[in-house]
Image 1 (cartoon, rainbow, N blue to C red):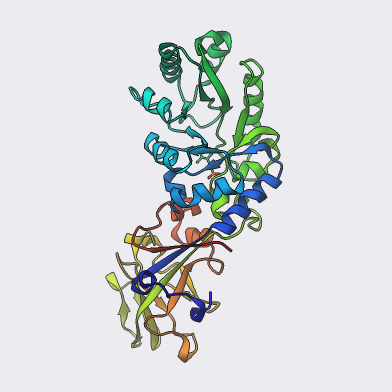
Image 2 (image 1 turned 60 degrees about the vertical axis):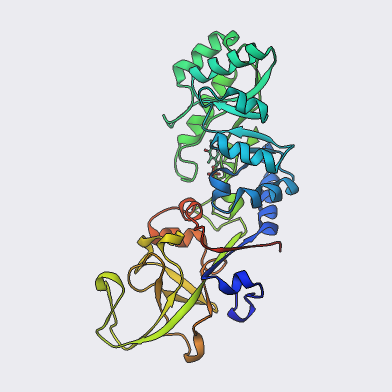
Amino acid sequence: MPLTDFPTSSRAAARAGAVLTIDTGALARNYSQLVATGAADEVAAVIKADGYGLGAAIVGPALWEAGARLFFVAHLDEGLDLRQILPQARIGILNGLMPGCEADYDQASLMPVLNHPGEIQRWSRWCESIGARRPAFIHLDTAMNRLGLTWQEQEALAADPASLGTISVAGYLSHPSSADDAASPVLDRQRAAFDAIRAQLPSAPGSIANSPAMFRQAGRGLDIARPGCALYGVNPTPEADNPMECVISLHARVLQVRSVRRGDAVGYGGTATADRPMTVATLAIGYADGYLRSIGNRGKMVVNGEEVPVMGRVSMDLTTVDVTDLPLSGLAAGDWVEAIGPGMPVDRVAAAAGTIGYEILTDLGRRYHRRVVSS
Ligand SMILES: *Cc1c(COP(=O)(O)O)cnc(C)c1O
């Protein structure tokens, strides 16, 4: 975004050190685009971790508006909050059924994802105790050894489906371990195992695809897909161009522009030394805002379409960028620099930090002025 166009009309934006812009129009188009892939009959929206850091209260209603009816969060409390925001939505709780909290799920019409036989037993007892059928998903582990019924537990369930009692199975899910790696054969094996066990279990919808798996043959053709990251603009196909639209942009304010003499160092530890007379801009963003310390001396930001390298370590509240090569009039205190956005995709920021786009999003700070737009 050209600096001159960046709106600071509101007082909150004028006061802010950094502004996070969330484009619900782009989010809705990403949802529609995932639906249009035809990867699954229904596309659920995963909005755990406060909507991947964007704010569940912002992305939830926008995705509902775009047509999403089934949502997944990780924690019971996230589900209880979401229920207040989306009274009509179907909501699944990925982390399972917290012991002793069965009534909390039921009263808020939340569907636990039952991850082990103990949870199946507790939910079926709950259904029995209230004399009613209640929906839940059942997680079948096919690769990750993290959550979900083991292969032996799946076979035991197939041999004794009566152990489900009056649980109404909303669907079976399994989670891909390696769908982001186009060369990995694991998703094919997971799909084969998932299809094989589902054939032996009481009939219910199946769901295996996260965002990347929606773009792989073995992830397609089931009832429900469960994308998260792709909705928010992370590239679900790392081996190819990003098919998704950019949803967030993050602009940091210039606090100072200063000249640095040749041989002088910048920032903590003096890890970057000026090899010529340089110009450095100091920005009001730091690792306390989720602009990770590992970006220091590695990342880049964007000023009027020009990339400027981060110079020195990222501090808690400040980051320094080398703007020596910008035109003289390039930058002044009060201007805005794009740290994430169309010119600096979240995946590139992640690569500089040695992590993945998911972590950049979920670490987004709480000090930003958050601005919601709909393009
Ligand atoms: C987080 C999560 C998803 C979404 O994954 P993305 O890679 O962000 O699309 C889907 N299913 C489960 C079980 C998850 O935990």
